[in-house]
View 1 (cartoon, rainbow, N blue to C red):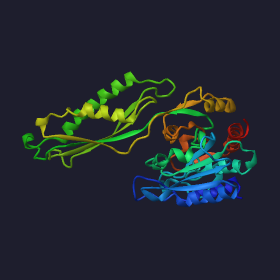
View 2 (view 1 turned 120 degrees about the vertical axis):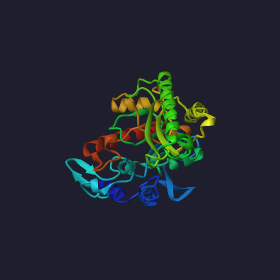
View 3 (view 1 turned 90 degrees about the vertical axis):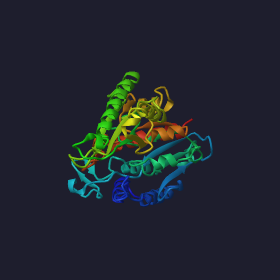
View 4 (view 1 turned 180 degrees about the vertical axis):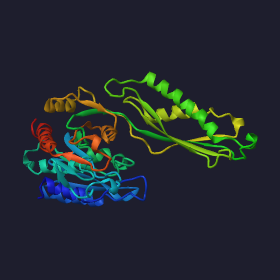
Length: 385
C-alpha cells in the first residue's frame, strides 16, 4: 500500500480538469480507478457509478464495515476534479507534487485531491471487525464546473450513512453554513440601424440600462430583507459581472448581454429567486420599444447550505477542534448531501485562498492534525456506541 505522499503524488499527477469549456474538460475516470484500486486493497467494497450524461465521468462510493439501510455510518467526501490551469504562471509543474518550505505544491494539492490520500491513510489502519457502523469514502465528479456528480447521487446509494464530512480546505475549522451560487444571463435584443437616426432602430444597450437599474433596485430589496451576521458579508450579494453589446459606434446596438452572480444566504430558495427576477423584469421594457428581454440560468446553481449549530456532528467537531463552526462564502457539495438526509459539516486542511490559482499548495503542518481529526471522527461515529 502506498504511503500518504505517494498517494498525493499519484493523484496530483493524474489530470482531471473539469470545465464548462470542452477545450479544457477532462475525464475523472483515471482518478476514480486509482482510488478504487487503493480502497479495494484495504478491504473496502467499491461501487463506481458513471454519470448518465457523461460516460467518461463517474462517482465512487467505497464502504468498509456493515452496509445496510439505516446503518447510520460516516461519509468522508471529496471531489476528484480540479479547475483549469495556466502553466505559464506556475513556478513548477502543476502535475508534479513539489515539496518546498514545508509546503506541498501541485494542482489539487489543497482543492482537494490530497484529502483522499489523508482519508485513505487513516482508513487503512482501521480494524474492520471493530466497526459497528460503516465508514464510506465518496468521490465525486465535476464539482468545479456543474456539480453534476453530486446531483447524480441517489438516496439509496447512501442509505447506510447518516453523517458526512466534506474535506474542502477550511484551515481545519469546521464550517456549517455557506452561501449559494447563482449565475444568470440576461439578453436584450433590439434593432440595428444607422446611429444618425435613432428612429431607424431600437437600442439594446439603452434597454439593458433599464434592466440594470431594476437589478440594482432588486438587490437593495433582497439585502434589506435577508441578513445573517454569521457571514463576513452578512447580506446576499448581486454582482453585475459583465456587459457586452454592440459592434460599432455608428450602429444602433441590436444585442446586449449582461451576466450576473447572486450569492443567496441560507433560507433563500434559488427557484424562488429566479421566479422573482423574471417577474420583476417581465414588463421592464415597453412593448412598443421593439426590444425583447430573455433570461436563462448559466448553470443550475448551488443552493445555500446550513447544518444547525445544535447538530451532533457540529458539536462533535467543535469539541474536537476547540473551534466554533463557521460560515463561508464559497460553495460546496454540502447542500446535495444534506438533501439526501446526511448531517454534513465541511472541514479540511489548507486554505481556500490557495485554491483556483497558480502555485496552489497545502501546508505540511496541517496534514497530521487533520488525520487526527478524521481518526477521532471515525472512532466516535463508527466504532463506539
